[in-house]
Image (cartoon, one colour):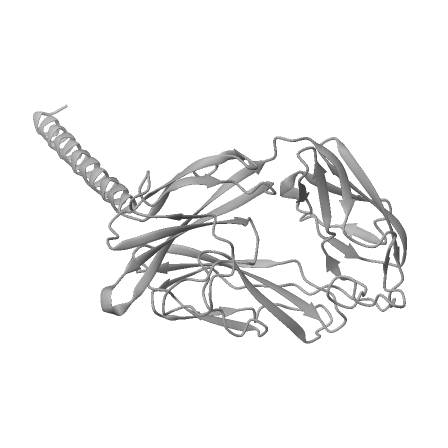
Amino acid sequence: MKPQYHRLERTITARMRRLIILLQGFVFVLVTGMLADHAQAFKITEPAAGTKLGAGQTVTAHVDLGNDTGIIKVRYYWYGEQDDTLVEQDDATAMGSIIAPVALVGLSDHDPAFGGKLVVPKEGIGPMRLLAVAEISRGRLGSRSVFDEILVHVEPKAALTTIDFETDKPLQLGRSGQSSAFGHVDSMGKIFELPVVGDFADGVTRRISAPSTGTSYDSSNPQVIKVLPSGLLQIVGNGKTVLTVKNRDKHAQLDVDVNVNEEPNEPPVADAGDPKMVKAGTKVKLSGLRSRDAEGEALYYAWSQVRGSKVALLDVNGPEATFQAPQLSEARTYRFKLRVTDRKGADSVPAFVDVTVEP
């Protein structure tokens, strides 16, 4: 190889090395900056997200205040993974009052500050959310709030003794005198949740309807009641079936007699729209306009919030619900649920949409 080619090769190699060093430095700065920004956010540090906790266990709640100053107190709340009952935000962007029991109020003189001893709900089972809402004083301007939320898994230490159904036995769907057993008229295609509870050896009765609590379902006649992957049940025909529910090493059975109008009906499909990223203070519109019904019937809408400190959600029974994005110091995610019902009373499987609010 000629000398000029050697010189060219060495020059290219040197430039590539410099470029690699520059890229490494850029990545280091970028990652460091991201970590620094993350550390500046109000955050629950204990218990850690994803932790397995015992029902009734006492844990230490601890938060990192980040860059937020003027915090007066931090309120802690427990919710089931998909509970619709949330705490109202305590600022001008929300209306109403606190509608959930507070599990702990953390103050500055507590140890740790704004934290303390937190009792896991004794009736808890499966995925649960811990919501921490910090109230920040703004002097004459009043106060605003910021929040953080984590998901943990709660497991009772006591053994499951029996399973029971919180419904009539046998369950009659569509017969005279029971036209609305689960909130809407019983009809072909209707989707519903069966209320199931478990009695445990510690004397606590816990709701175990959700598959995430370890419950599984089976229908002896899938041509009458079909079990959906989500654990919801769907009426698909008239006749009798036996529903078997299993959890841990226990099981229970429920006789079901379905006698509804035989007019064919496919359940509608809920569509809560695409995820959104919005700025604090803006008006946010949730759209269910892409929801549809196979028969082309008009739909009834039901919006609810299942994640984040509660916002004032308007037009919850319309195709487009709205709310005012709260003022926040760090980006936070809110989740909303939509179910639609057709004219014959058939419900959809729930649809969800996340809205991330940025400062």
